[in-house]
Amino acid sequence: MNDKACLCKNIAPEEMLSIKNELPSSDTISHLAEFFKVFGDGNRLKILYYLSRHELCVADLAALVDMQQSAVSHQLKLLRLNRLVKLRKDGTTVYYSLDDSHVESIFDLALVHLREQR
Amino acid sequence: MNDKACLCKNIAPEEMLSIKNELPSSDTISHLAEFFKVFGDGNRLKILYYLSRHELCVADLAALVDMQQSAVSHQLKLLRLNRLVKLRKDGTTVYYSLDDSHVESIFDLALVHLREQR
DNA sequence: TCGTAATATGAATATGTGTTCATGTATGTG
DNA sequence: CACATACATGAACACATATTCATATTACGA
Image 1 (cartoon, each protein chain N blue to C red):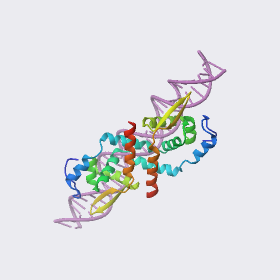
Image 2: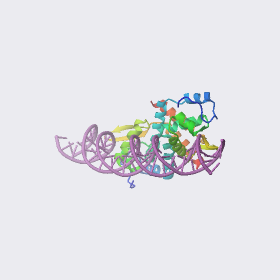
Image 3: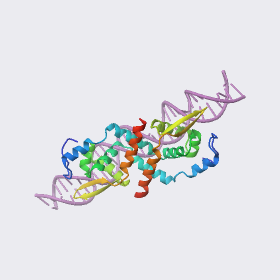
Image 4: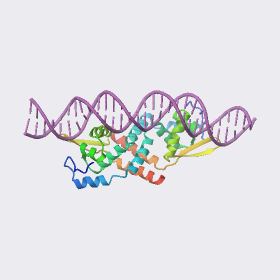
């Protein structure tokens, strides 16, 4: 915006600027968006749900979510990059589990929103 | 999954089934995913931030977020469909504001996650 | 060491998403 | 009524994303 005041005159120019200046950094905003994007897919939500209930190997996850093993691996990688799940290896099998205590709180809040508004 | 037990033998078949049966309905999961998807875009996050600070008209939002009016309108429609913002008309100008008390709590939780994990 | 099992990875493809551009609609004003 | 203003909408395009398929990697056992 080119520093001109509010077009609608329902907000004081100084307030307009102060609001603009308090916008979180573009880095913070990108991180936030990336974080939420991870939750924006049903299959990933199912994976997170199952892992919130029990540590599971890739094959079992694939069976539960009804996806191919490869697809599950791809999604688990994304979840790992976002530090939402962690892994433990035992021989050739890899066990995944949740690596974030906030996941369930975030789910709960979202569910409250959905319940109240629909 | 075709009702066969866990492939990895680290989880009892009955537990496997009970976990599977307690998966939220596919409707709930779709709604959740759609909801989070809305937050998965930086421009929408900025719009939500600004609206959390002040009721604003479309033109001012466009100036603040540095988007074209048309793009802002499209995003506002999406936010409206997800009941995150509401509008108030006054002549030809349309004022938008937040329509959800949970938005800021969800932001806060996500920020906590980011702060702890990076 | 050879083969097998479990998982990971890369390329390709299909589908989804955000923006732009052009235009439509509604409201106010001379 | 003609015109301007503020916003909404539809189609098209560019780009991102999820899945699939084929193959690589890693660890184990005979």
